[in-house]
Length: 354
Image (cartoon, rainbow, N blue to C red; front, side, top):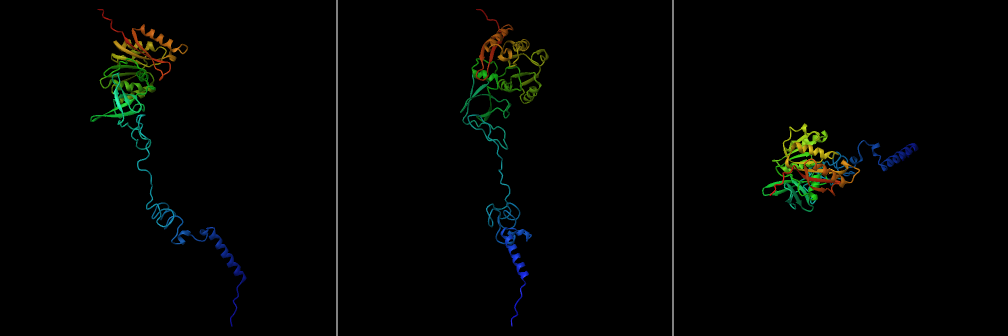
């Protein structure tokens, strides 16, 4: 005789609640509440991302053994590691406007040199100055210190036989002398081997190109009153041995007369109301008879109420009173507004009568 099994109603209800609870948390992926190990380990042969142990790609976090997303032995292969780029970005080397230079190395890199394949350099009618012809033409000077730029200017290297010659672009918007040359000035009297007194040298932008022109056989005496600009000038002179910096007021040439020998040319860019007097004092002290001067005149600095033409005419008269004979006057438009360059000779030799 079979004895009927007695099932406690309380046990039935308890079992039912446990099953409902277990089904509920499994459905909502709360398995970590009942197990200390991940579900991916509990269910062998399947893992949510990557195979074996761990999350993405094998043992550990990323890129371990068998890595990759989804499935066994997935896509990203062994070891993961950093992809990265070997040599870094490095910005394009500056080169000249008519074609890109070599790419700089590292981050940002230095401005690269132009290869010179599609570029031709021709001598300008002013000795020591050149024209670089390519997609766009540019005024250049032969770099006295190859591989070094002074103010971030662009450079180009040209192969001549077995040698490479480097040229530096000369920006007329940053140099009054370059603006005068491109404007068609007849003479600048600055040439290889010349001794030049430069008044108002500032940080040495134009001085560096004059240094290129006169070459190793010439000298540039660079006078600048500002001590801040003078520091840049001194640093420039450390690399360019033909520059002699003089940090002094050009109004008092007697203070530096022991530093400067007689010169062939004076270039002045002082932008002062009494600039003609300043140039005359230095000419009387340092400029040889028959030497030449090149003066940049900024009309607004001399008289802001008069027209530029009237100011230029007035300055020319002052020069004539100081044994300075102007021979040429040229406006610097479109590079500089209300500027002119006056070129002349100091104490010219008397004409010989036949």
